[in-house]
Image (tube, rainbow, N blue to C red; front, top):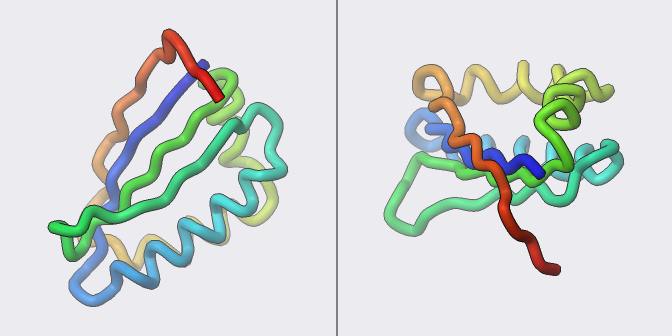
Length: 99
């Protein structure tokens, strides 16, 4: 399994809008092969950050998800809300997962 944890930093005042777009993305991911979960959250002490945690059957499944219909449009909507380039997510090899 493949886990990706990332942070996107919104420009001042755009955290909620950015989070909303990422929540839309999470709903798309419900239908994508290989997706186990796609979590969107924010830290209470971080006024601009939006955090995403994704669990996939494989890195290939994650990479293929970027071609899913609607994903590129959501990325284009999110880009103007970002304060700089997204931080590279932490790629984690999952050793154990329990439901």
